[in-house]
Amino acid sequence: LARYRAALDAGREAKDLYATGRAMESVAGAHAELGDFSRASDWYGRALAQRLAHGERADAARLYGRLGAVHTYQGRYGEALRNWRAAASGHRRLGDTAAQARALSEAARVQEYAGRPQESLHTCREAVELARGTGDVRLQAALQLRLADTLDRLGDPAAARLHRAVADNLLGAAREAYETNSARSEK
Image (cartoon, rainbow, N blue to C red; front, side, top):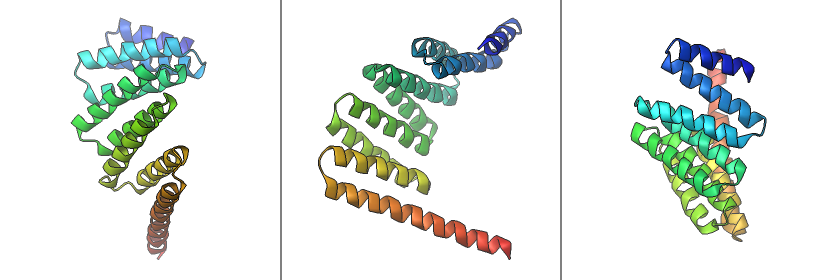
């Protein structure tokens, strides 16, 4: 923490906005690791404000996610959900469909923690649909498993089994493709 604060002071003294922003994120991350989520959210908020002020949309979207995670740990589900939705929206505007799907998946998790299982199911399905267009098989499988877990908690084990089977098939196909590519490169 002391090193990050020293880096923050050096960045401010040099008027290096990028270094200052990264140092604020590092200070926030250190507080989060120490379990001081209130200070972590404060520092992430400062870093986010700086990124927004300078039009750094990709960093802002990422920081909304960090804030969402910290608020989730604090049990502040309303704030967490707002931040995860802002992260998803930011990634959508940037055209990063995989990151948008991940952010929506985290929003679904928060909805579930907040006792809103039907909303969680809807958001999780939205994330699964987005992931289909990414070509990222591991992401698709992970979101299928998240959806299966949600369906289990909602009392629909048959649908949950179906989504687990889809995830297994996706991972099996990815494993076969990897092994085929590895065999080709060895020749």
